[in-house]
Length: 369
Image 1 (cartoon, rainbow, N blue to C red):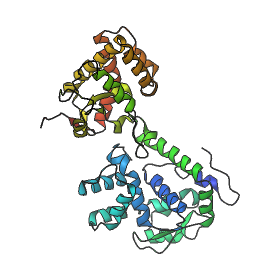
Image 2 (cartoon, rainbow, N blue to C red; image 1 turned 90 degrees about the vertical axis):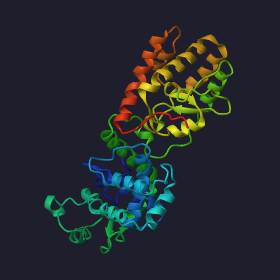
Image 3 (cartoon, rainbow, N blue to C red; image 1 turned 60 degrees about the vertical axis):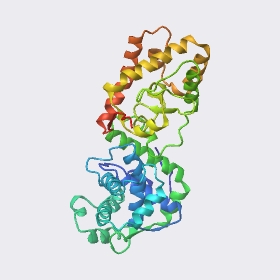
């Protein structure tokens, strides 16, 4: 992606901001800077930026479980806070996470926050500091700040070192440039973050959809489809063998949505609201539940070709929830025998299931209370 040209500023250096990135800090630090500039804040304490970094990484670590880097301190801090404050939801509002970070007296959290400021505030501007090589960076923090503050036309400079209360001072010309081109810059930042995260999470699908918490998922068409089936014959959900009713039906992602980041029909099955809540973001035990899932899906497949109203409802859902011609041919074409249908479903879902398992999604078996 090309950034807009400026006669006053060296945009080539800005475009190289994320070259040779081995950890994620640069992305989150720069993202926090842009966020503050948009609020007309040009003097920003380290602590404000660090708190925003943690809040921005919160959902992708606690919900999506993304790998942010081989030695990533940001992910470690998120997990530490989650451990110390287990009642904080993955979907907690960003403002509430920041509030907690600013009010906590936990010394371990404060110490970990400080570690995020040892390198990234300085290293991120390396493309602008072309005369600084190798050993020039390996000096104390105070000497590094003094050296950088002598350079011209940087994005920002530093006040006197005061730990997390040290401030960066945004150059006014750079602030104007970022405000004027904020949509393009945000797109450029997201593009680079996606490339980085795809490299660190090669088997994880839907990285582009995992930079932020999701918008509300709309599964009403799928729910309506299953409610129609309930009017034809009873349906036992696969986890507790409960007979589903129109008033107690919830659509479950067999492999958690937080891993697949899609609503494909082959991964959706009906259960009760309480069981769906109990399952949360865990993987249902394969040996226990896949056979039940396959049998249930094949039963509805047969109904699809037996009843016109089920077929019509399926077609309405398929426009939105079946997005692969290959999947449609393997699983939903007319005339499949049960063994062939099961084999097709397994070939689609098992690789995704195994990948999610490798990423640390827990094994789950429903326990009847």
